[in-house]
Image (cartoon, rainbow, N blue to C red; front, side, top):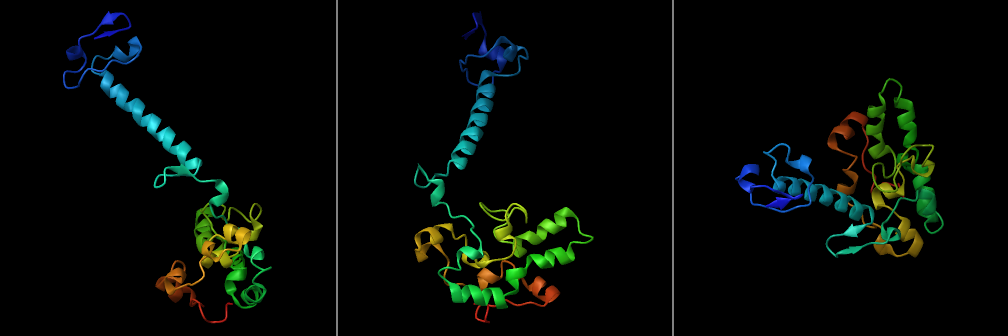
Length: 200
């Protein structure tokens, strides 16, 4: 095999691998145990990681083979965005549901907790924490600092934009509640899910 004007015997490089001609530099062959096929495999793996990351950021859907427009990915908008069309439900939620002021519990309990322990509370006491467009901090996303409508009904940007009910979760079950209302938490904090209990 000829590379860089020199002849290399593939058996000298690694007799267990197949020969592969690549535009490699001489220093790649300083250690005679490194085969060109090994280097080629490493390069391909790095390229796959980069391509996968780029496709993920562009909203590529592997099932359809197409990139989705970022506006078609639902994002969290906050409970105030629900109010214009759902006045009665919004008023009832704000009056009766403890979720509507759930961030106060974090503020009340955070003394003595580490930053990591406080962040563990965000999953249930804020809206969309750790998800695209979800809660980041009270300063950056104040509209999501409590557990709002979208905790149960899902991110509402497409529903708010189109008014189409297919973009929001309308019928809830106890499974939706059990994401946060686990049996351990119910015992520890003595609370129960309110599906039909007057939350809205």
